[in-house]
Length: 259
Image 1 (cartoon, rainbow, N blue to C red):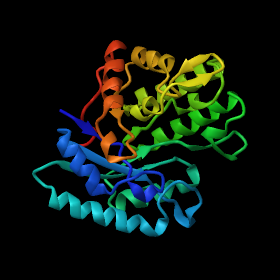
Image 2: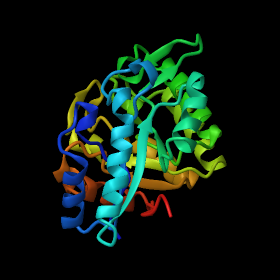
Image 3: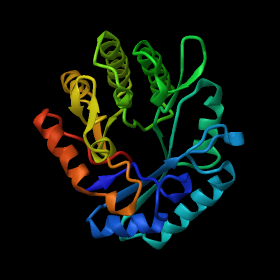
Image 4: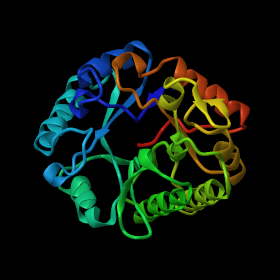
């Protein structure tokens, strides 16, 4: 079975292709299930790199129509990728109940610090903040409003070496994932970004091998997400390599996120 539940469309302003473009590529690639999870807007458009809030209904209505049009050809799911921030708790509930979103991916690009400041994970100045990032992820997991955690090791995109704070952040996320039985995503887009130069050598920005070795030991549930930003990436070499890497780690990823 081939599936993918991490799919972006052009509405987020940094991806290309319409939802139907992704569906056609998914069918050509032999996928049985495709979940759409474009970056969710927040009320008042308080964060960038996502669809405007005024387009949310258009996005969801379009997916409802496509689910009907492609019934029998591929199973489609209507989701969103979104950060967990405690002040938006009722908004997440509203998305699931009133907007009838079928799943939320916890993609923590913004997180809360111990001083209650909202920070961007791409702009982390020192590794102590990784612990705050992990605590925010764990809080999101504990709400049980999210179906999976996207790129949980994305903090390793920053130019800092693995240290005790990375260990602590990883343990916080893994403990929450195991305790709440939520899958963590091995993200193919990190591989797709290519090899980068870091202070401790060349590597992919993520997935980070040490994180996933610890995940394997913890026995956490795992899925692979393409995190595709153009239709041809729905199932590509980076997705294939993700499955190969997990096999080497002794991790058997799940193919179904929703039933």
